Image (cartoon, rainbow, N blue to C red; front, side):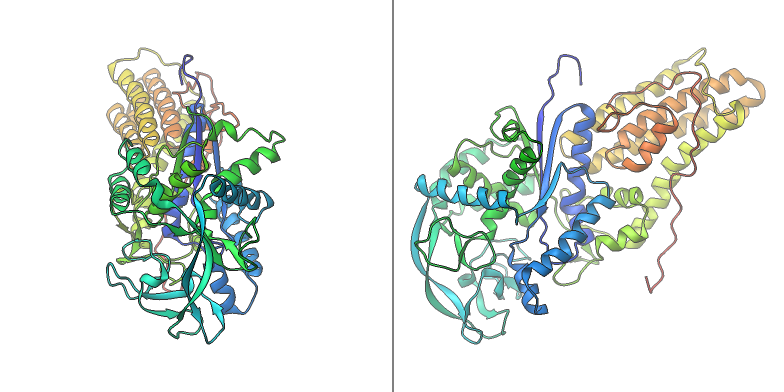
Length: 553
């Protein structure tokens, strides 16, 4: 950031995982690792980042699992929220606040949204028919009803959404519906709910969506297509005790705000909770009521309707809050052609990968495969290959070579850069360019390309060493060798900063060994100097070469 630039306020809003089971690798690559990379870059660049999320503790997947195990929803939440939170800590995620939708603040925000929408004329009461399981004697929330999708024919679509085509559904849309509780065909019974006038936002949403620039084609095309098909009013409440109770009592007991709507309000409630915990209760407004602020919502493509259509409509209905700057939804990571699914047990858990990979190696293997524009099929074998052939061979070995030769020829002390020629200058210029281009790509949420560009920068340093051959000049021109290794040390310091958002743990080791200063939010996004006289600290191999996993692992 130049002296004339003012820091931006950047809201990094991360999808809320259900605390209903272990999260898998598809979740990590789809929605959870990208925002940490994005946030780390912006902090290093000097922007004011607020990164928030939490575990969704009201989703019906939780009550479904609780019913299956014969325990309370609270027991399921306690088990999996802790596991998910530990995953994020192990991976080094830089949340300003990771919370849950079970907090008092979230309840307040959800009920405030309800009352504001009601006051603004966007909620109304309506009696409709909802599926009822006569065998167990209860109304069925959306995810308790399964059947065939009317759009694509997928046989195991849920009552709220089809996993195959990502269309949002109502349970009554399903062909041959069945109860998840008893597997019997449910019947329709009358029930009264509040409905949201989503149809009132048809034209405002289209006008807004058509002005979006830089959004991924699959996101903007899906969102515009969905709105152009016509938006229909949706139920805002559900017959469910596990959730946020209504702030009005005219529908009687047993009614909660529909989880799909209150879950997206979590971005706002988490920001407010963060501000309250800081002792600055109005600090959240810098990211929510500031027309110069930017907000980025990191999700998987199955959540596009909720973040590119429904959430903007809710914000419009509430009034006075910033709309999303971008919704950089990733596509799916698949495993042998099948989409990862926690509920169906497809894809290993994040915890398993943390146990079997070094953390930065895992971050690299996932980031280099980000499914930003297309579904991406990955395997353990391919992840190991990329770690060994790219991360270890290109970057890890480069750092080790420079540190080792400086130790061998100069007792680990960086030498004066004497008689720099065009090759030396060209390398430093190329590293500066690498930093600039990686920063631009990350700011445009082209994270996979950013990592590829950083690794190309590392390869350029390898080429420089091969051309300069310091192991040969050490025998004939020690001053030239010192200059070569000093230039190379400065180059790897710059490449390390370019890799910092992706590989934070090993980057810190490299920069500390080179005595590059770091602030509270990591290194500054500028080409650092490694002055003559710097003694390079102890730095062993950055990464271990990986072996294939055994069949029993």
